[in-house]
Length: 248
Length: 264
Image (tube, rainbow over all chains, first blue to last red; front, side):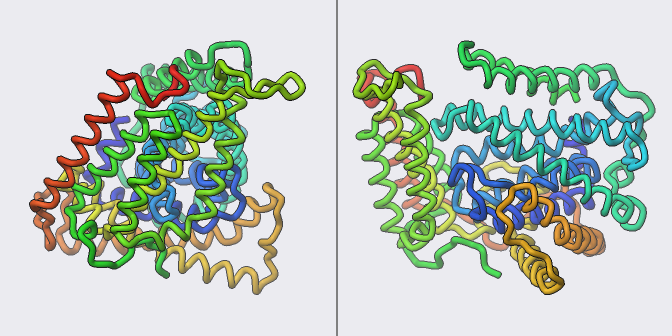
C-alpha cells in the first residue's frame, strides 16, 4: 500500500494515472451501451482487458487510474451515483492486487517484478491473480450495490467476476504485445519510474495476499450457498479483503 | 469529440458554487437511502425532477430515458426473488409473490432512477474544471485533482483516436459486429494495442512538458477561477439540510417510509 501513496510525489506516475484513467474511461464509454447485462449497472465490459496489464506495468498508477477511469466512465455515461464510490474502490483493487500480489502470492507467484511469457510461473501467477482480483473487485462492488438496493449481491458478484476474469484472460494478449515496448523502449515500468528495489518479500505482504484470497473465496462461494446467512459471509469477506489489501 | 453531458445554460443552479452542488447531491443520495417505501421515494424523485426542470437539464435526462426505464424494469423483476415480505399476494407454482416485495422492488426502481437523475443535476450544470476546483477546495489533494482533470481532458482525445483506429481496422477487414461475448472481447485487441501505445507515448511527452515548466505536485496552488460561496449557496445548503433532518426524523422517530424493515 505504501507505493500507492508515495507515487503521488512523482510527476511521471501522476501523468500515468491520468493517461490510464483516460484510456479506461474512453473504452468504458465507447462500449457502455453495446451489450448491457444489467442496464445502467453493468455491461459486457470490453475495457476489462486493460486492468491486469495496467496493474502489472504501471503498479499504483494503474490502480488509481482504473479507479478514476471508472468514475469518469460513470460521469460521462450518465450513471454517476453512490454506486460509483463502490466502483472506485472495486476498480482500484482490480489494478492494485496484480502488482502487489505478483511477488507475494506464494506459491502461485513470480519471485521478481517481471513478466516472462516463456515462464509457466508468470502464466500461473497471471491467471490466479486475475481470478482473485476479479472476485475481490466483485465482492466490494456487490456488497455496496446490494446495500444501496441497486442489485442483489448474489447476482451482481457473479456477473462482475465473470466479466473481469474473461477480460483479464484475453488481456494476456495485450500484455504480451505491449510489455517490451513499455518497459524497455519507453521506460515506463513502475518499478523503474519509482526506483523500487525489492530485495526481500515481507511476511506481512504474504499474509495480506492470502487474506485477500481467502476473503475472495469465502465471498464468492457464499453467494452460491442458498441456506447460509449471506449477510455474515459477505461482510466477513469484505473485512478479509480490506485488511489483506492494507497489509499488501 | 464532445462526450460531456454539461448543458451550457444560465440558471441559478448553474451559478451555484460547485461545493454546494457536490454537497447537495450527497445529501440527496442520503435522503434516498432513508426510505424503502415507494410513495416516500416517489416524492423525492419528483423533487429531483423539479430541480432538473429549473436547471433546464431535462434534455440530458432524455438521452438516458432507455437506461432509466430498463433500470426500473430490472428492479421490478429481480428484487421479488431476493427480498421476502409477509403478505402473500400470489402463488405461482410454489413461488410466492409478497406485497412487500413488490413495493420494495418499485421503491428500489425509483431510488435507482433518482440516483441517476441526482447525479445528472451535478453533471449537467457543472463544468468538469469546476468540479475539480470544488473538490480541491473541499480538501482533495492537488495531485489527485490534477490527475482527474487531466484524465477528463484526455478522454475525448483518446476516444477520438480510438474511433480513427476502429475505422482503420474495419477498412482492413476487422468485423466488430459479432454478438458473441468472447469474440467481442478478443476483437477489441487489434485496436486496444494502438490506443495503448498512442496514449503511453503521450505520458512521456506530457511529463517532460510538466517538468520543463517546473511542475511540483506538493507546491501550494492558486486558482484562475476561484469559486466562492454566495448567499444563494448557503440558502440551498441550509434548505437541503433542513429537509434531510426532517426525513431522518420521519424515518427514525416516526418509523415511517419502510416496507422491509431489515433493509436500507
